[in-house]
Image 1: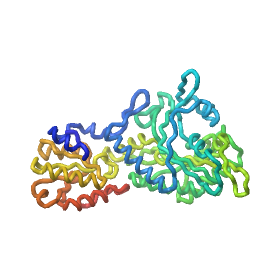
Image 2: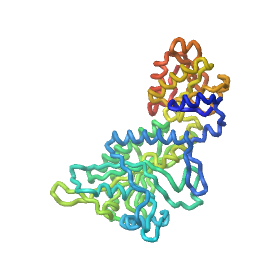
Image 3: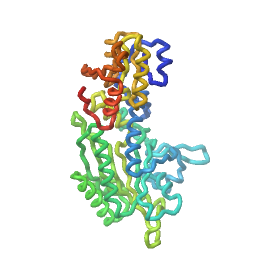
Image 4: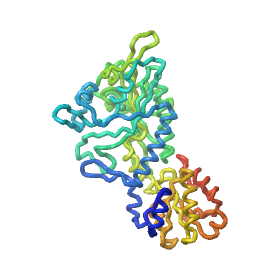
Length: 417
Ligand SMILES: [Zn+2]
């Protein structure tokens, strides 16, 4: 049987499918498959995790005052010329032309967000203005630098930009660092490292601006209790950046988050706002991402958690298994109760023995099974079984509330039954 969701359970059941046939290897294959072209695909369970991460960041950004936007993947060469990307980044861009209009796939969303900011006259009273986008980006990386699903040529990142005044910078960066720290803790990474990448040899802007920008990022990090290591010369040509690296349980370091300060792009694309004295002023732009590439983050999570994701991230959180066909109807009710409560439930109701279905759920890394027999059906209860075999017989409503509590982001430790 292929695990099914509530909306298709009747159809699946009527086909009388047997137990899940997927191997352990398939069970763990949650992430996009690497391809020689450097592009990946997300299989259903991998995409389920992707959606959980996306929804998680979406809620966090919305609460922090970011408006989500969507910008095109294909834009004219002329646009990339004005932004400076054609000159500075052109060799990494996929170019598309129909003979009349030269276009390129976007390698990042930043200039598009400036375009949104530039629509209409902005007042200082509106600032900071914050945009977030799950931007689908393409970069023509050299084939030698491709690394499975860790480094691809096509990826989606949790991109965000803040347009603000100088006096807002430290507070905005500190707010982002707080968001990032919460997100990393929720994913199971309590510790991370931070580095301040400073001015490179080839750069835009004068030294006074660089002095100010580097000091602001450093101050914001220290305000959040961090002590950034300095990476001399590794900043972007337009400004310094803070880089955040996760440490996984094997001690390996993965650079994921970044926040960058930029006065160049607003200037190139002529972003401005009306200052309190009525003059036109140039906003500063803060670029940031918590995860970076979402596909890469899924791969890091799988490495870190040994293929068994925490409950809140699991693609299938609970497998409902009636002991015999006599409890099939009650099993459907139980599955619906979980689904209605926002818990990702699947039916393990095939003809196989219960023990085989338990093994199958284990192989699929499903964290909890809800087993229902005659007694459970009669009393409106379920038997919750953990991966380690621990079992608790509870009323259905209690089972739902227990699993709901564990589905909260960051609830990493299995509730004691
Ligand atoms: Zn950006």
